[in-house]
Image 1 (cartoon, helix red, strand yellow):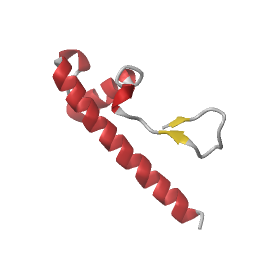
Image 2: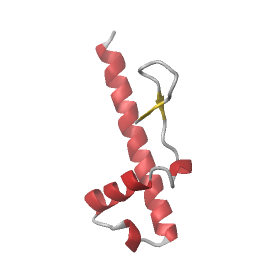
Image 3: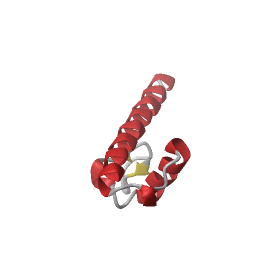
Amino acid sequence: MDKVKGHGKNDFKEISKDDYFSKNKEFATWSKDENGKFFSDLSSESARDLFEKWVLQIAGEEASMKDRFVSAHR
């Protein structure tokens, strides 16, 4: 998760499909580790489709972490 600079310590910037280039290193690592696919072996279309899947997975994990944080601090 990326913190948003200048905001509170619990503020995070959500990852979206617009982060395709800026998050390539993390995505390529995930693709190799989780799917056994090297980024360089993917077609542009396959890479973008897989990137959207990764974004949805990350979004789900972030939501889960936020829910746990809120529950723990009630």
